[in-house]
Length: 115
Ligand SMILES: [Zn+2]
Image (tube, rainbow, N blue to C red; front, side, top):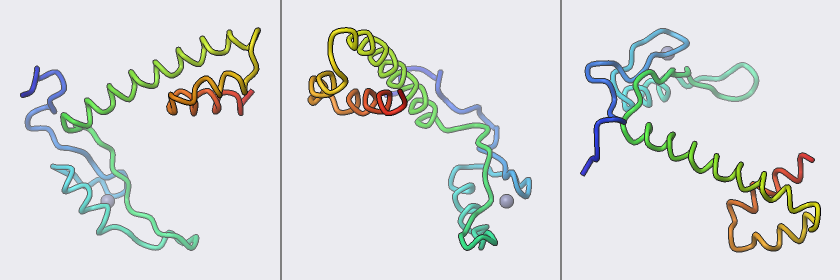
């Protein structure tokens, strides 16, 4: 079903490495298991695990990241266009017009909150 190998992880390269103890983690399951087993009190009343640098993400994670980037770019472009409407319409009128587009409305309202 895969279209191409563009997003495939690099063969023979480990999934990641622990930033805290430098342990090599072959697979995402190894990383999750290491984060789980290294969970301990953080000395500030909470709990924390070691953190992992992902060096060779799996195919789906690479695609997720590319799609997130495309969606985020579309939201930014839309907000920039909507900002131009402020010459002739209020923030609330524009928000109301976005009621059928919840992701765009959230991006718009986030932009308005920061103005
Ligand atoms: Zn570790």
